[in-house]
Image (cartoon, rainbow, N blue to C red):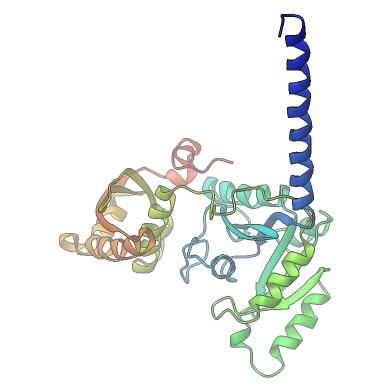
Length: 325
């Protein structure tokens, strides 16, 4: 082969490779036909069961759950994938009228989840009324997106209460589907799943099929500890706390982590630690138990309490704690 015929051979070779790539792309698109994928935003007022619902739908305990309102502070994604679908759920803070900087940041997470949503899950329960003081119902009705209305806590209904409440809500919100569920017990979850998939657009998967969430391990470690604070303390103390995992080191046998718990006032620090450190020790023991379950590995946890004066009202502190959007 001389120097004149070599470029021709290379040209034909490149052409063959190009045709093979086109064929591969075409086959990929053919395999994606009929595949559904989309972002599903779970929204509603505080304490209606949004976090319990996402955990139930994903099959993993990603969002912390307590009986106190406003436990969820971030937008937490939970990804459920199957052979022909991928659902990216977003658990969001309960919608309120914000009173200070932290709550404003929380509401930004709600609004950002609506901006990229393909389907909205509007969650309420047997006790909530359709008073739209936050403007949420009006906002979602103008988005032109499929809305799946979910009446939660069906296991607590008596007599015709469930039917009556659903008829009441149908007069206040136009939805693609209306579903009653018990997120706690898993009742009617199959019907909800079908309603979600029916409203998803055809689209290739956005994330690898084995991916479960967008959050790092340190985020979930901090959330587990914060949940124990919510469960063990009353009044304002849990709302004034923020947890930061300062260090996280893992080897084959054990995870060693250092958690710093921030409060707003020195008096709260004393309450959190308790007499002789007993209260904080209890939080540490309960946290370590759940951390070991979550990570399926032995955990060594150290906790320290610090004061960050009025951190919930200061933008600089909030950014340092990850409340950015």
